[in-house]
Image (cartoon, rainbow, N blue to C red):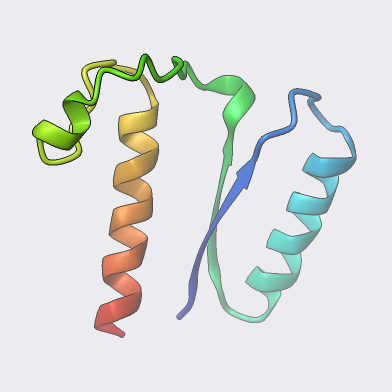
Length: 84
């Protein structure tokens, strides 16, 4: 089974971009894929402050926001793909 993470960055709920994301998910799921959609407009994501702490701390950011959760989702998906 394929896993797909769809990231919608549009600030407009039910706008064209979200409709396209939903259609992509429908098509992929009809072929047996497992899909998950993330709407960035619903997330608390701060701006990079350029402190370079991530370079000194194995990629850990000092800003504790939803970006950490999104990174983990991406890493999980990446490791799943390499195992299959």
